[in-house]
Each structure stands twice: as structure tokens, then as C-alpha cells.
Image 1: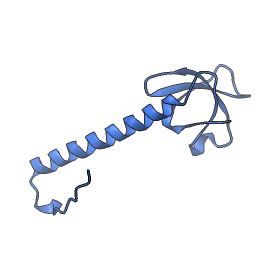
Image 2 (image 1 turned 90 degrees about the horizontal axis):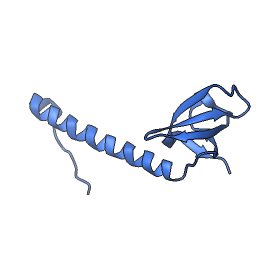
Image 3 (image 1 turned 30 degrees about the vertical axis):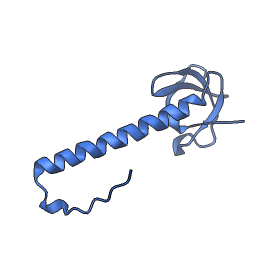
Image 4 (image 1 turned 120 degrees about the vertical axis):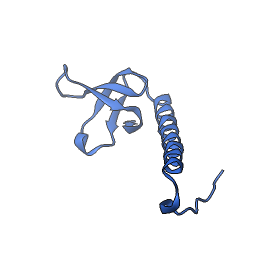
Length: 95
């Protein structure tokens, strides 16, 4: 369901703007939750993966635990004691 919002935000009252913000945040949170759910369905403990983030460019990880929103991962060839908490929708399985 798509609806067009042709509204002049400058003419809206503060209460109307707050209600609009609440609806927008709700929709965004729902979409992020759906992305995480779909991403978690394809992940499993022991899977090798890479992370879609500039900080981890070129690094491989192994999933050690899957939490509600994040996965606990260990870097392949890195410090065995260091664990990374990585959001599930950023992980990509390496075939």
C-alpha cells in the first residue's frame, strides 16, 4: 500500500509532526527488524562469513553464537580471544 504525502510540513502543528515522526520511526523499525529476521534465517553457527562494512574490509569471520539481533563472531586467523558483535543483516555467507 503506497500513499502519497503531499503536505506542507511548515503548516503542521507540533502534535501532528510528532505523530508523523512516530509513524515513520515505527515503519523504519519494522523494516529493519524484517531485514534482520531474513538475514538470521540463512546464518548458522560455524558459518564462514564476511561483513559488509568498511572497518572489516578483507576479513573473514566464523559465527560462534546467534543472538536476537546480533551474531557473535571470531575473526579467522585473528586473535582467538577477541569476539565481534555484528548485526545479522551485515553478514554475508562465504560459499
